[in-house]
Length: 258
Image (tube, rainbow, N blue to C red):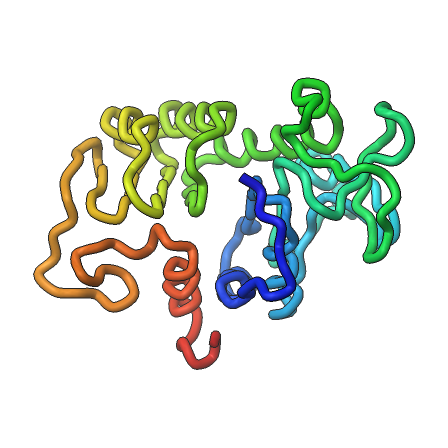
């Protein structure tokens, strides 16, 4: 599930995602939820110069500021601007550390600080880890974001192999028909998604060769190719690279973004 970045990782898709995030004109803040452990999203945002907040305050051993993760509960003077992207790492990160004994608080550490064990969920102590801050706080943020009225949730690169996240997504679609969950699948539509999308009109599943829209499942059929979206009989936006190229084009020319 988690991807540990390497020195030669391609930052292009993450920079394009950041370009889109930084140029979007929105009233509500953009929230990026990820179960990957790597720092590629953060690197992309920093490369493009997009301000973001990950729940932690500080640079050396930063603690989580739970009151800022839930802005409705925070004092108004602490409210973050809508233009700040929110990056919520639901399963932990390579730069999170557990310092001291098992009851210690998890912190985000700066470069070169390797003291303590890496805080990644699920771990060998799966149940206990899931009940620890910041995991419980960020999972609650995800739950609250899904029930915001008239919002759209887009999943990309998610295999729907995590039942606890699946149920949160599916239940949100069931209970809030004026919001929409869009599942972009790299290849085939997973059975768990197909089952729920077939009876939930606002859960839309788009696979490489077929889609489920308004509860109806059918293969893709276009009269002509659409570059970057539908080529050689296949829908391409389930590929994160193609998706970020598409998003970046919505806020500027490909030359500006690339």
